Length: 113
Length: 110
Image (tube, rainbow over all chains, first blue to last red; front, side):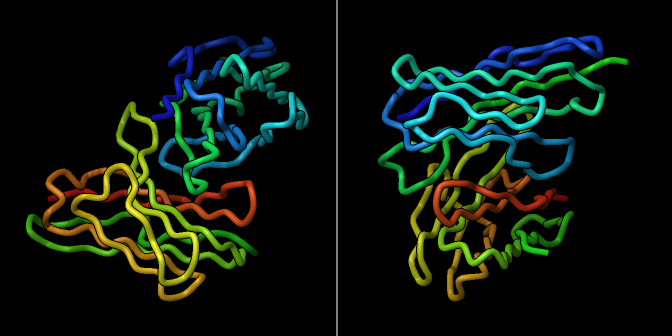
């Protein structure tokens, strides 16, 4: 069974810092990996999707990388802002799962002014 | 606006009651999913459906039931057999490779 781990579980940084969130998965047979943002009491917002054949994706201040062979992905947030405060979830879609995502427990990020 | 609509946002259930959570999408997506989220936990898959009139159990299907009579709709029933139903429930859909989520329903047992 695919296990997804996110480190750290929580992170607090001052505004303006660049930061990295980590995601690891145990089975490299994945179809794609998706990063989500979740605000308290809300649903998930898709941030970036990396297909298994890709190495990275970028959107604005966000950059996500994928190293499928080592079972790792990172989400890089440049010049963090208080509005970035949220929980960030990593999810992988195993090749064999019928397209259902396996989620990590998330990293809770707080960016202080 | 295209998207996934979950209702209600908050739901209260008495012991022994069945309740149904609604999930509707107008994205023309084929596959739909129900996840459960507990504090400090990742999302866990309850049921999923890849086409109309077909659905599969996920990791924690006991005490839940679903139907998929229309492409746009995938309601989840939490039955009295689910002993610990208090949680945040999220519905999702996919067409090709990307998943999109609704805003969730918070279910509380009273």
